Amino acid sequence: MPKGKRRGNKSGAGHKSRQDVPSSDEDSLDNASIISNFSESRSVMDEGNSEEVDEQTQEEVFEEKLKEAIDGINQKSAQGRTMSLEAVSKAFVKKFIPEFIVDRRLTVTDGIERSLRKGRGAEQAAAAHLASLLCLQLGGGDSLGLGGDGAGGSADQAFRDLRPVLITLANDGSTTYPARAKCCMALGLCSFVSGGELQEVVELMCTLENIFWLASSSSVQASNPEAATLYSAALSAWGLLLTLMAPGDVYSLMGRQLSRLVTLLESASLDVRIAAGEAIAVATELGRIHDADFTIGGKGCDNEDLIETLRGLATDSHKYRAKKDRKQQRSSFRDILHFVEEGEQPDVQVKFGQEMLSLDTWCRKKQYDAFCQVLGPGMNLHLTENYLVREIFELGERVSLLNGAVYKASKLERHLMNAAAFKARTILRSKNRDKRSATAM
Image (cartoon, rainbow, N blue to C red):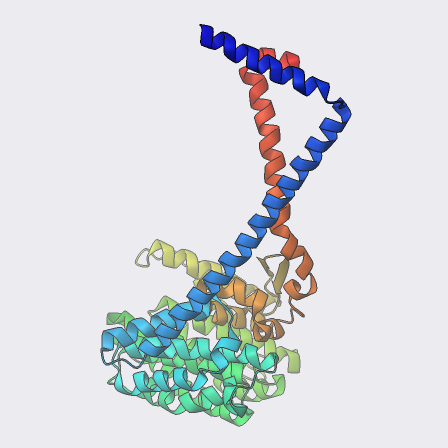
């Protein structure tokens, strides 16, 4: 106990000495608030700087891993090349980085071409998928004025380098169906993105026609779903290229040939039926722009047979089809039927970030679906960041560039909001836990 007394005397003496110094309660409160505010603002600034450093570090790590994946495209192991192709594709989906890719365009293009020529199965499919993503990245870079090594940095030049081998594989019966399907998709999207001559587009459409017309007479798709995947991919790519044609050209072309698409509505494959229905809707939309009386079979042709076929698909309840397939088919063909019969346009709203994309025509819907098929979960990011995609869908300038200050301050705002919410939550819980503290407050 004596030690306790001595402590009391020392503390008392210290208390006495502090009282000898003249001070006011207001000054001490003001100083405390200044020090507190300074420490809080400093901690927030430090946190912001650390977040910027973390982002920079993550960017460097991302680029380093992407470099390794690009180098891995040329390794000896087929499995390793396939994994590298898939890794680069995932990176291209995840981020829009045309500045990084332009200087490595030749390396990536050569790797894709080598895998397409010498690879097999999964490797060829992965290479064809990467070809589509490469053109999307370079096409967006063209909008920024990134030329790389002259014209070689453009999506057009990349597609010209890859087009011959893609066409060869798409028509090669010894190549696997999934790889041929990916080649058809790459041909359609790359041609759409690169903006080639109309004659080249028409020639490519003829190539795709020779593939998917087999679906109307071939029985292979009934026993082999992979064959149906090829036919639907070729038909979907053909429908995408159809949106590039002038209404007058579509009117003259489809008036003679579109009736053949009606036969594909009876295909055993759901994907083929839906792709044929969407192509019919796109062709009808463009044909009616040129001539309001445009019909599927040509001038003076009766559309009753088509209407009945579409109505049957929109109300299909056959039990031999899977329940999921019936639901998807009815949903798709209800919209197609309403358009062909009554002229009702699609009305789909896609929200991404602070923006909204309206899909109010069949051409635009077809283009959006084609991009989604390639970009997958990265579609929203490319709608926000990719200049080419924004130009195609008429979205204007990037919002992040127009309102960059808002985005930079958002992290600080979130921190302050969270701090205020935490303080209010702490006070409320204190009141509920201790009535005495509530009374004191």
